[in-house]
Image (tube, rainbow, N blue to C red; front, top):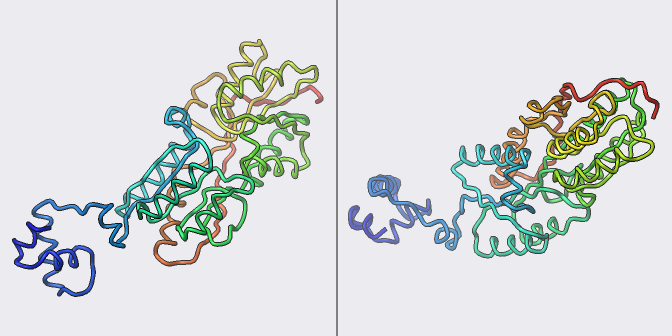
Length: 331
């Protein structure tokens, strides 16, 4: 900034005012300062700018998973890609951090807010009675929730229409003759896990036995072995994500249970691997990148001074492949 001040012939204070859009300098001087700053390759230090009350141009995202888990989780990678696309279009960056529990996540929000590191945050994996909601509201930290099933007072959220998705799954399997199925779900404490359970039951088309897991292949494999070893085996298994469905397909092969002749398999999420395995998996397919972009868009509405909105996102499409078929077994 001293170099810019010398080149333009003004004080450092005037340079600061010009670069930060503050009143007190003329438009001509502001333009001249910006031209010189560009010539010199000057970039403002974000932390220093934030300490002076200016926007950080950063959005925060905290995830309860390791970076290794993120590599195998297609849904979250596509979601982050969508966020990044929208953030980049607005000149924003993404602060991504991994934690082990909710207390650590709330502590990060408090630190980010105190140090003015971020302008707003995206909350994922909404819990039942989630303490993060009250925390960000108390801080006055702009936040959008990716998930949930309804309005969250004071917060923006982009929820998924689990009732529509469950209706497509249940209607399709019932039309094939399935009556009693199993579902390997995500963690029970997640709000959308309960929403999916309730949505499937509400269709009244199937008898569903839900086995909680944790989205990993290991947990899904254990659950699948128990399900397929039961005396009264279900005629179909629905998995809450693609990775668990792929693990379940592998277990069926190990146990010499033919898919889809002996048991049908369906995944609530899609990924490229679902098309490459044999048999290819029937899935619910959504544009997750677009979901991430729309989540960022709702946060920008808050940052632009608009009131928080709750928007229902329901673009799931049932893609039928080779892992599902009609059944002649009663169940």
